[in-house]
Structure formats: C-alpha cells, structure tokens
Image 1: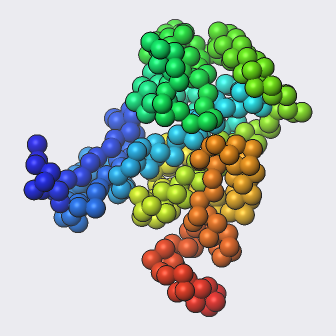
Image 2: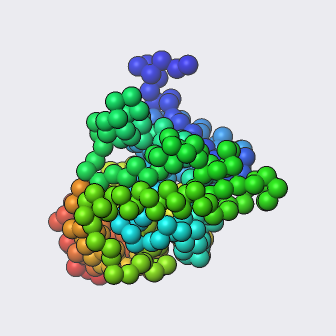
Image 3: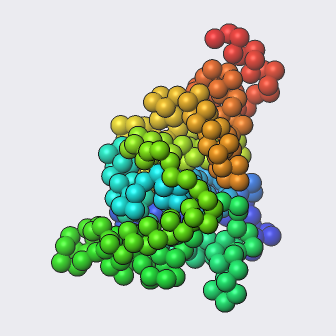
Length: 326
C-alpha cells in the first residue's frame, strides 16, 4: 500500500463495470491531489487492457452510479403512485428498451443483485432496522420500502437466486431470461394498495404512457448529470455521455444522456418537467433543478455549447460578453 500522507499525488482509482470481462468502461477516479503523471499512467494501463477510460472526480457513486440512483428510485416509486399497474415491471423495462436501452432497470437490478442495492441503502442508513423495526436515521421524507421488502421478506435477490423482480429458469435462456413473476405482482399490488390507503392517496385518472415512463425515470438522471458537472466531478458533458454509452447500455444513436437532453428533449422542457415534479415531491432532492441547467436555459444554449465555448471557466460577466457576440 501507498502511505497517503506522503504520496497523494500518486493515488487514483479504477472503477470497472460489471461484468468486467464484457463492459469496456473504466472510471478513472482522481482526487484534487492526483498528479497529471498518475492520471496518464492509469490511462495508459486502461488502454493496454483495451478498456475505455474516463477521468472523474471522487464522490458517492462517482459519475455513472450516482446518476443511476434517481433512475432506480423512480422506477419503484411509479408503483406507489399507481402510475403503472402491478404488472408494470415488464411495462417499465419494455418502455426503456424501446427507447433504446440495452436492458431495462429491473433486469439491470436483478443482474447486479438486489441484495447489493439493499446493502448500499442499509449502509446509508435508509432501510428499516430488522431488530427495532425503526426506519433508518438518514431516510428522506419520500422513500419506498418496496425494493427492501423484495429482499428481506421474499429473498428475491436477483438472477443468482433465480428470482428477483423477475423469475428465472435455468432451462430457459441459461437462467438469464426474465420471466414475469406472479409473486412480485402480488407483492407490488399489496404494498401499493396499503401505501395509498395509509396516505389517503387517490388513484390518478390514467396510467403513464411509455414516453412518460421514460421521461419520469430519465429526467432526474440527466439532472444529476448537470449537478455532477457543476461540482466538476465530470470535466465535460461528453464524458458523461461516454460513461453511459460504454457502461450502461445507452443507445448510441441518441448520443448519451446529456446530448439527448440538448438535442431531443430540449433543456426548457427538461427544466419545466423537473420543476413540476419538484412541486409534487418537494422532499425529493433529485427533482430540484440544477443551477447549471437553469443557467443554460436562461442563456438559451445547450450544455454542450456551454462547455464548447468555455463558459464553465468564465466569470458571469465574461459569459454575458461572450453571449452578446452570438
């Protein structure tokens, strides 16, 4: 090991993506102390093992997994709000795969292991204490135990147990083909009904369309990408796009989440939708629109152009001068 108090400049991390022998992405994790020579050395190693390396800063989840948190959270909240039916696991996955994702969020969760997600939430102080029955001390105002109970009550930890959000059969697709689960449908229906009754929530007039499902799940993911740029965890929007193209099965013809927001969604639409969702759910921090997103909308430019023009490195006065020349 390297004594950090003496050799901080020589320290960097390599975050591989599962399954590592298949996924090409590596997040090269740096600190404020990491030297350019160290970064170059790790980039060289990454290239030698035929991986695609993206330099990122250090935070919880780095870039890719930090953005996944709101994505995987909202996929479950849709059941509580009765925006999809109890059969919505496949409905949500189908919507995202028709959008172009390589796999849907529930299949992804089963592949990674639902127990892994549960362990992360437990480490963060979010899940209910199994001994006392009390909610975790760090639990936010808006939280669903639907995924927690899938693990703790039903042991549905994913593909490795042949049961997660889906059922699996070793005789079908080598145990990897997702089969809709009656047990999960019953669990969702029971949990969602009890939740709505407890909170006296009326049923919405209609279920979400596939496009609405995609936007509801992906818009907070993109918003988190903007916040990552604000914090300089990622150096540029295209770095985030590369991470999602090579690490998360984002459809390449859509160019990555930040490119998609700029060119298909359009940032004013993204901002309006997030503002509306934040009004509905004021306790949910990932619906709070990014300051950088607001700035881009106010300037009438995309985040890609914002970085291409170097506005991220300029003072507000310099930005206004640069924009006046457009």
